[in-house]
Image (cartoon, rainbow, N blue to C red):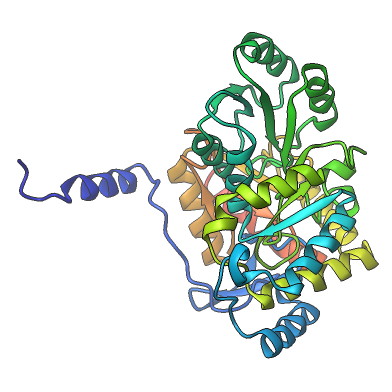
Amino acid sequence: MATDKLAFIREELAELEKQGLLINFRTMGSAADGWMIVDGKKVLNFCTNNYLGLANSAQLKEAAKKAIDEWGVGPAAVRTIAGTQRLHLELERRLAAFKGVEAAMYVQSGFCANQAALGPLVGKEDVIFSDRLNHASIIDGARLSGAKIIVYEHCDVQDAEVKIKENLPGYQRGLLVTDGVFSMDGDIAPLDQLYELCERYNLLTMVDDAHGEGVLGKGRGIVHHFGLHGLFDVEIGTLSKAFGVVGGVIAGKKAIVDYVRQKGRPNLFSSAVTAADTAACLAAVDILESSTELVDRLWSNASYFKTGMKTLGFDIGVTTTPIVPVMLGEAPLAKQFSKRLFEEGVFAMAIGFPTVAKGKARIRVMNTAAHTHEDLDKGLAVFGRVGKELGVIR
């Protein structure tokens, strides 16, 4: 027996470093915004999911401060015992109205939301049909459910139907789940076609709209974008991206939300979200209900930046959203590119395996409403210089 029981861990870490896959964690020294202090340096921020610039909003911060004064810093209980506050119920009511659904449930994160919903809805006698590029939280939630998982090719409705025909008859019930916006590529699911397919085969429908809420459908998400409000069985969302705060939401048919509220394990066994976070989320809903100004600015900035990157000669994949993947291929090149960007004052991290497939490493640029066109011009200039220096563009 080996004397060093941690040898395998050290070997794995060394191998990750050798392959250029070891993650280097940078330290934030300021609030998430268009510009940030990162590792002690002021840089143009293209990394956070702060789509609408609300993470440092004065309105949201004031709401959070007032909530702390009234409610304290933590609920000190799970929702089912003593953790459900009036603020939670108000946010759930407002989110349901905002999304045009019968009911909504607020949980600790978008990751928790997928785990909370999938387990109660399907089990060992059931089958889940899942897009090949679905988020890790969907994959983990599906595994925890115990249901059979059948993967269909990315955004391929025909392949999904083939898989459904082949596999559904052997199970009690089926559920199809997809991301709405795929966070690494910036493309969107053909939700209208998937809905029609699921109706034909009587499948439960579930969409994770983490990168669509506050972005698509005038801010109301991908279901609104496709005009399917009230039709999709379950919408999973997050309040940590466009809303700028933290938490997840499970929205949809009242019977389903009520059932998940009774059975979802994160709801039963993990403390409720703080009053400060909940109040800040309510303030974000106020802003999104009152105007589409921030959403419109986000899309304007995204169009401006994507046009600039294409003109420079970069491959930005198939994105149709504000997410801009700068396709570079191998992880060591992506890491070197990110390092040079940072040295030039632009914060955009490299993304490689296992977040994306091997050979598909990239820099992912996250446009936000917090950026000005002057900011974007600076970013484009730096990308151009570094791209030429490293031979990515001519």
